Image (tube, rainbow over the protein chains, first blue to last red):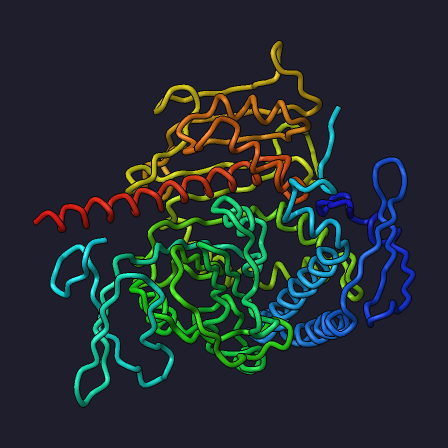
Length: 122
Length: 398
């Protein structure tokens, strides 16, 4: 998972970010992102449906433009609110994709007592 | 068992007429109903033995899919899923006993409308509180409603979906306690209060993988929403029966990763059917570090605090946990020392936490307190059911 940083330790995060992106089947954009973590870099893959991903990027650009004019206006706040809404929707979409990805996981979540799903802890 | 009569006190009888907006229907899915159709004007007199229990949850994290919601519905049993065969972008979740409604569905302005007016979704002007009150009241009285759907992907208001009154209705969103009429309908209310530093850390985790987002854009987004958030959403804290406050840890000096959290469960005293949890001695002030001879914890350990406080001029009890759980036995050890948990068996909290060990917060106070609040709500619901049964038994004897 990404390393969460507070404003103080943040500069390293931005400059170290590298991206590779390739469209996957089904139209999701896959991103491999490098994050600095204590003791090295961590590679994280995540996929957001293409359409939502583009909406988010578009809304950010739009918000930056709107706020360049008047940063205190209602339009600026509304624009960033839209970014937040779309980011949340993108995050939910990612979770949904992840949640549905493994059929065995889905089955075992609903039926943990069946033979296939038994776990042993020694 | 008890017969339903129109004029007896314990039963709620409502007359529903098709409203001008065509948003409510006189439908009932409960046993023991009597429906009359008057001559001429179509109206239904309905008596139902049970009123829906309504829980309000104020959270900024989107609707219905939040971790808190999933833990809550899991406590009641069964998985909550979107309604089958309906709009795939519906925000509603339905399980056997519980229906979760997203209050974003009551936006009066869609995304374009808000952009034109220069208003955020946090602003009350973007929400139809009259409709929210009308529909929540209708569901509480046992009347199914056609609730609008706000599509978060397109930003438009989609055609309504039918919501049948469940045993437990949870309304989740930004403004469950904003309108006083809606507030009065709530049997229990919770506010999830994430501090700014933690919010920033979580949003970075969520959004950094998104193309287009950068640290600056995430920061700008939070800053731009802050004035409206502080003006309209934050004040709801004072009305909540329980507040879960998430703060950065005090155990690690200069922690910037936000991995370890300090979580406070603030419980209002004197709330009907809700007995706050406590540590060791109710009403006293306790500082507790469970790690020692009996329990070994890894760095940074776990620290608990319990005590009475004042919160927005209300008497409250606060249980606070700082740190994280690394092992199962830490969790069970802590559970065995907390009181008034309303569990049905020893280890139920631990079992619920383990069941969802992949959920965020499963190793710290957020998961712990969300699970405990879920059990308290279950207890509240069972008390209401028992009260109704007793009332109907008493009425039957008369």
